[in-house]
Structures are given as structure tokens and as C-alpha cells.
Length: 344
Image 1 (tube, helix red, strand yellow):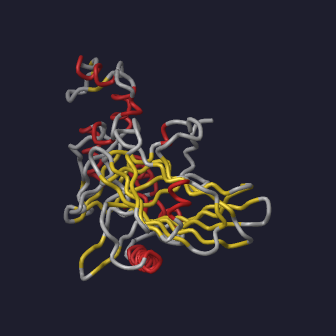
Image 2: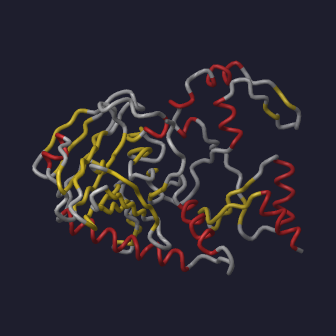
Image 3: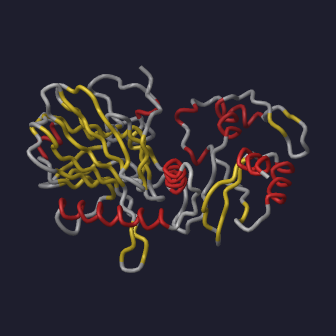
């Protein structure tokens, strides 16, 4: 069965992860959004019990799952239910909040588990990949952490879960809350549970304040807020500027070697030999940085719709990032423009 695209997204505009309906992290790159994918099962099916490239919680006698975001945040909550009346709640997020007057966005994913009904029995499977899904990193561990040593990075998960249960992947009854902080190979300053709790509270407060500053219409508020949060988690650097953008044209150029492209003069041309050679590689192995366009055209929020319409026509683009002081605050599409003009 192919991987579902019904996915939740968590992140902090520094890193991001995609999580499926059963709380498996199926895509995540570290230490940046365009880094080596430590979770990559989004692009392929599981290849047996020895497969890797994911972070999963397997509930024994699993029956069903539920998933939602905490209101007006980028914090994802998944509940797994078993056939014996047990249930576990999994909360995933990447910390983002103001700390000592500066924005704190560590390269860290936080996962919290807590029992909500019965005595849920589960396995925690943390199996990162390296070298773009080609191999598993080496594993070492201490009293409350596990290190994953790859060729180009070292990753650490610090946890108050049983290290034996995590390393040996032994099923265990979840007696109470446990937390996992997955990120750089750095010693955690403070207790695991307390740090995860504080990160969750401060990240929740940050997103609530961020949403309050949005200018949104009366209708479709929930949908617009969710879209704005998702855009905020897109590929940006630490200045808030857009690193790049992936459009259907970039995808087609890499997925279809024979894709006919429009030149700057408006005429159509065949791809070059270099483009064909690039397209002959397996596109599933290409990182986003090799696909996205780094020459991003943008408009300021003060430009008129007439200016934007002219640019769309002359540059043959369907959407523009909208910027304020160099930072992306939204997107304007051709469909948005048409809807506004029709409403006059």
C-alpha cells in the first residue's frame, strides 16, 4: 500500500516534519529543512520489520486513531486506541517562542506520550536513516539518551522512557507520561519531562499570540488560520527570508526529462542535455534544495493588484510570496487575484 498524503505538519520555520494518521514521522530532515532526511518512509513502503527511516509508536492490538491540531497552533495531537479499551495520546511539535528577547527555534522535535485510558501497551520505534535513506546510522546510548552517529551528523534523543525498551524495541505498558527530545548531539539542560512541558506551554503561547496578529475575514477563519500556520512553517532561513520555492514547473522539470519548457521570450523549447541527465536520476532521491527555484520573485504587501497582475502576465507565474521588510507574510495566487477582481 502506498503512503497516504493525509499528513499533519509540525515545525518551527527551522525544521519541519510530516506525520501520518498513526503518529509515524514519515518525513523529516535534519539539521535543516533541506538536510539529509532522517525520516523518509513517505517516499516508499515499509520493507519489512527491519526497515528504517521513521519514528513510530506501535500500539499493541491497535484499532483506530484520531488526530487534530491544538487550536491555533502548529502542535499536532494523535490518539491511538486499542481493542481492549486502552488509549495513548501523542503530542508532536517543534519549539518556537521568545527566550531572553530572542526567537528560540532549536533544531529539535519534541514528542510526548501519555496514557488516556486503560493500560496501553506499545513499542517505540526510532529508526533514523542517513545518506538519503541508504543506510542506518550507528547507535550508542547512555543512561537517558541515545545517539545516532552518521557520516555527516550526530543526532541525539533524550528521553525519560526506558532506554532498554527504546534500544531493544521491547513492548511495554505505558505507566505515565514520557517525552522524547530529538535533535543535535547536545546535553539537555534540565529534566526531560520539565523541559518538554515548558517547551509545550511556551510554544502554545507563542502560536496563540502569532495568530492574534493575523488579519483574517469573518468567514473561513479556521481554514485561513491553518493555511497561514502551514505557510509559516515553509522553508525559511533564520532571517525570515524565503530560501526557495517549489512549483509544479520545478517538479515537472525533474520528474519528466522530456518536459517542454517555456523560454524567457514566451516560446517553447526542449530541455537541454544537462536537464535530461538530471531528470534521468530517480526523482525520489533528490533533496528539495536541488529542485526548488532560488530566484524567487516576490511582491510587497503595499503593491497594487494592477501591478501584481502585470507581473503575473509578464513573468508567467501563478503565485507570489508577499513580503514585509524582507520576511514572508503570505502568498497571493492568480486565483486570489481573479476572485478579488470578480467581486468588485
